[in-house]
Image (cartoon, rainbow, N blue to C red; front, side):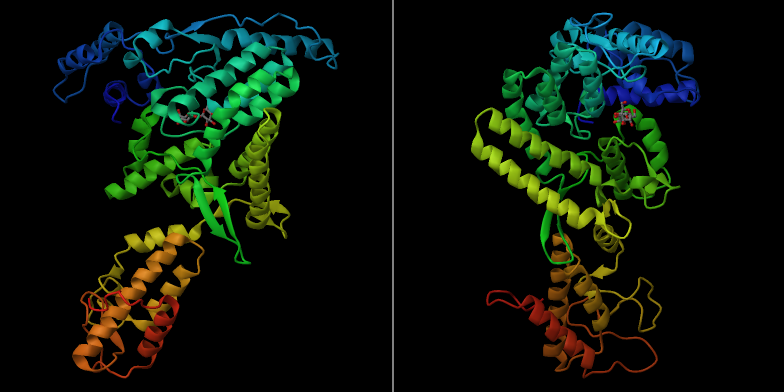
Length: 510
Ligand SMILES: OC[C@H]1O[C@H](O[C@H]2O[C@H](CO)[C@@H](O)[C@H](O)[C@H]2O)[C@H](O)[C@@H](O)[C@@H]1O
């Protein structure tokens, strides 16, 4: 991370694992520790800690260091009784008559007191010492190791608070999430600096809607409205947006989860490093880290739903899946915004969002609905995976796609490229519905045309195969002399020229 506090805490986390071992080790504890001093003082003391001959810090030494430089995780939030809590709210669950159930429901209701916190002033005064974010209103935390506010948890917390008639607390929760949008442009996964690279299932508009339905507080809607527009832009812009063509050729705009992060998640860095250890290249690891963080953005961290092989976490392919639920949440957000726009007197925005919601509903029907199964199913962007794997494969060479990576001297091997294989792959990519694949297809076709042209100029003939590592070079190898003529090469060049054209100013020489 480029945040110096997070970088230091992640280092501390990794050293603590080496000292304490994996049993009962929770990596998140370390990135939640509030500093007692300035970071530089803690860093230099850490660097001076005595170590064993093997390089590890001994457990008592680590304990003393933690006591001296850090407060307890979670201590930067203070317990506070919610202003609107009463032991038995008027009109509480009128239809729950059974005395045992009613008394249990009242106990659950009273748990709001245990989970209610206020961010300490210290966090506002010295934010650089805390990964906790300084939210303005009191918060309700999920509990236990989750010492901070979470985005999608908040929706069901709000639903419960409405049952408990704790309207001010519910509005405070929304106010906190709005403050995150105003600072970061989106609601963070959770209210920690290390969660800023991603969001979580977007349910803020639903919180506003449900609170409004109970309270009729129009001022509250007016305040939330501009932030909801910003949040909508975040979800429909480049990082999350995917354009997809249905079988009738209609283009639809849908959304996927995609974190802006390709490193281990700070709160689970030791686990992510361990999971990635079986991957060999830096780019495979970076991709895996992005898939992990994107899985966390989905709220389903982790699930076979996002894996191509359910028993291998490294096959996580979160960003290659268009999820039904995310698009349904955004559809709801669009409908909610349309309603709110009308309430605040902005009719043109209301119309605009109604139209957007209709388009998304059509996309959901067209892309996710499986009529034989009578189910909405996530859509796998297989082409993207195939494209990525093709791009990583080494098969795409200077002037075309090589038949294999083995240089055996056989003609259907490296470095020969054959016209029919170029054509099958280029057409497959071009018609896949992915813009990126289409542009890769065109690029391969152009290079192939150029090498065919160059070889023709040099040798006066079209060839049965070409050496794709060098422009203008015919192929070789095999048990007979390379042949010219040549039927399928001619056919493919003409088919490519018809598909992609060749404008005046485009260079034909390699
Ligand atoms: O209830 C809070 C959240 O708890 C889980 O995820 C969180 O923990 C992960 C590991 O510490 C973290 O990487 C993730 O970003 C957090 O949201 C749960 O899976 C979430 O659905 C839930 O909101």
